[in-house]
Length: 332
Image 1 (tube, rainbow, N blue to C red):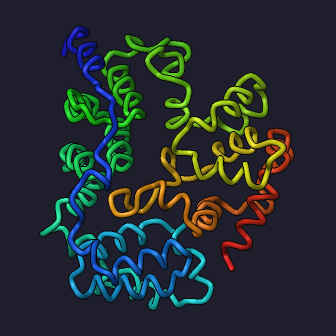
Image 2: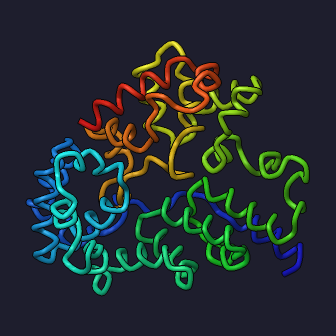
């Protein structure tokens, strides 16, 4: 692939937004009254009631319930608080279909009949992930599609990634990072400053870069200019929306630096606070729900007595005690 061809691929990245739940047909089972009630209970923080209902629905063949349960079971932030009162065997029976010592993902039950379930499973399989990106975008799971693209970059699959995303008119704005990173992987230094990397690339707004590469606590502590920039930009980073809301609510005197430190300590890399399924529960619905703060808190490591506490407190004095308090409440 020539440099000119690579440049044309970058130009061809048309970013107008991926398909959303509002523009797609309903997933089978998602319009059932019992399913809607279970989702409302889950969003309201009524975990046991909701999970039992979803488990019954999944066992009865409800595809939407199978997909949602499969996704919930993949992220401990959604269920870690149940561990203290529920035996492991009972928890597995609640969230996974029978099979083996730890059960099987409910996604496997839906894989044969629902393309969304198949795409979510294929995204985690090295030999299928390149072919999963387009279906994930088409079916309303853009964050999973973009994380899959990042996995491809980690394993040197830059050209297949470019072929998967080039020419699409529905890429999320954040996908520009993947295009630039893939091009720079193929021709090192051709599309970014050799000394500063992708952060120096004019194609990448600061909020897009921060979505993918949050600064480290050490950098925030030592570099005031960076700390100020991240604090100022935090409200523009869509993926940080729940964190920004947390800081506005609990640290009103320092919301920017609170969000900067929270992003530096956040789990899971890019898109750490997304809905379990953007197709079934849009991010905005999940982020505004009663359970969001608990899930946010459970996603972080224990912050009651973190390493390098003094350094972290220099960045922002409010975030650590506020989040530690939220974690205590979220794990009860």
